[in-house]
Image (tube, rainbow over all chains, first blue to last red; front, side, top):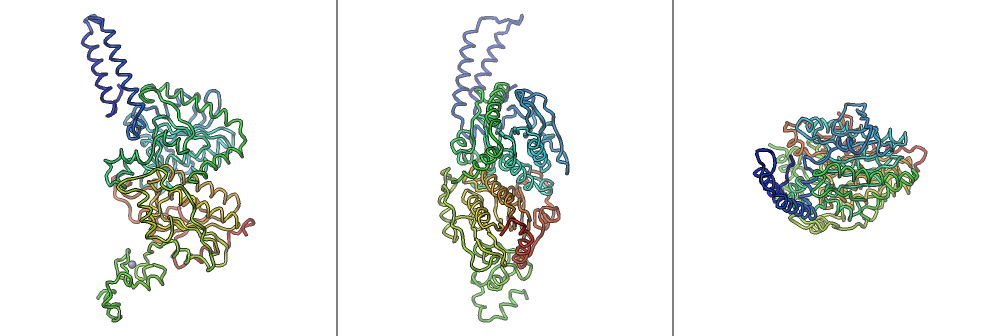
Length: 318
Length: 282
Ligand SMILES: [Zn+2]
C-alpha cells in the first residue's frame, strides 16, 4: 500500500474515488456489473496528470518529504536490483560492526566495484537495526577500511548516500565521531581509484560528506543535500522547527539548486511521482548513470583523478 | 567577605567605579569578579578557578607568536551567494559582526614564528558569528596552509566554532573536504600540522580540519564535540555524563594528545615544532 504525502492529497483522493468506483462496480461473479472502462480511464489519466504536475514543481520542503519517503528505495534495494554478487564486508577492526553503513564487493554491469552506503531500514525492526541510517564512528571507520582496500586492489568506489546525519549520541562522541568523519572524508580524497558518489535520498551534513567527497557527485532528482536538516536550521535561525519549509527554501537543498551552484555534477531522473512509485525504474536509471560515469573515469589516470577531486573542492567559494 | 569585596575595599580608588565593565569582569567559570587588567595579564585565564576565557584572533596571535609576524590578507569570496534570509538578512548579520570585530570574517592567519620556530598560525574567532565556517573561513584556512607550504614551515590552527555557517548552506558544508585537501597537501610535503582546540569547537569544523592534526592539543575545559549537547539529549533522552565533551574527557577517550594550560601553549607548540622539523621543513 502506497503511503501518500501531505501535498499529494488531491491525488490520494482521486485514487480513493477510483478504487471505490471499482469496488462498487464489482459483481458477485467478480466481473464488472457495467462497463466503466472509459470513466475509469479518464479518472486515471486525470490522476496521472495531477501527479506529474505536482512533481514538476515540488518545493524544497516537498522534496525533503519525498527524499525521506518510507517506501523510497534503500541500500538493500539497490543491491538487489542494480548490483550482482554483493558480498558485504563487516567491521572496523577496532570496535564493532555498524549496520547503518554497509559496504562490500559488488558487481555493476560486469564491473567489479567497492560499494558503500547508508541503510535506513524499511520497517520498525530493520530501522532500529540500521539505526535509521545514522552512522557511528565504527561505520565510518569501516568505510575507511573498505576504501583503502578498494584503492589497493584497483576497485572503483561507488557510494550511495542516504542519511539524516551521523548519529548524535554519547558513545559516538566517546569513540570520536568527528574524527571518524574527518578521516573518512580524507580517505575519499586520497583514493587512487575512481569514485562516484550519489545522494540517493537524504544527504545530511558531515555524515554525508564523509562518503561523498568524490570527483563525480550525482544526485537523484528529488533527493536533498544540506549542511543541516531543514528542521535543525529552522530551530536555530527561526527559533522554531515549524519554519522548516522556509529553511529548506533558504538553504538551497535540491538537486537542481546544487547543480546550479556547482556542488553536484549530474541529476539522475526519477519516475513520475518519485522513486518510490517505481523503484525498479529509478534504480535502473541510477545504474545506467553510474555505469556511464565509471566508463568515462576508467580512462583517466590516477593522478588526474585525485587532482580533479581536490580541485573541485578548492574551487568552491572562489 | 567575598574576594571581590576584599579586593574592592583594598583598592579605594576604584571602589566607586566598581560597576564599570571595563574594570571588572565576571568570570564565566566561578562567577567571581576579576580585575580586568589582572585577567588580561593572566592571558584571560581566571586567577581563581583557571577558567580559560574565549579570546579573539589578535589576542591569540599576539599570545602565541613572536613579534614581527605579518597578517595575511582576508580572502575575497562570494558574499551571500544564496541571498539567505531568516529573521534577518545574512548580509546584515555579516555587517553587524564586522562592526564589532577588527576582521572581515572568523578566521585570521598570521605568518611568523613561535619562539623562534617558523610557523603560520590560523585562528578562528568565536566572537565572529560563532566562529562559523563559511567560504571565507574555509578559504582563509586554505590560504594559511598554502603559506606554510610556501615557507616550508609548520601550520598551527586554533579552532573555535559552533559549526558550519548555515547561511551559506551546502557551500559551507563543502568547506569540510576543501580544508581536508590542504591538510593532505601539508602531509604530502612533510610539514607539521598542529591543531589547538579551544572553547567551543563543534559540528562540521570538528568533523574536518580540527580533528586531522598530526598533534592535537586542547585548552582546559574547552567544549569539543561533533553533535551539540541539546541535540544529543533530544535524541537519546538520557542525562549526559559529567564533563562530557570537555577537553579532559576527550583526552581520557584518546581523542587529543594533550590538554595544555594557556600559559604553557607557546612553549609547548615551539617544542612540538622543533621535534617535527623532519627533513622537509625549513
Ligand atoms: Zn573563575
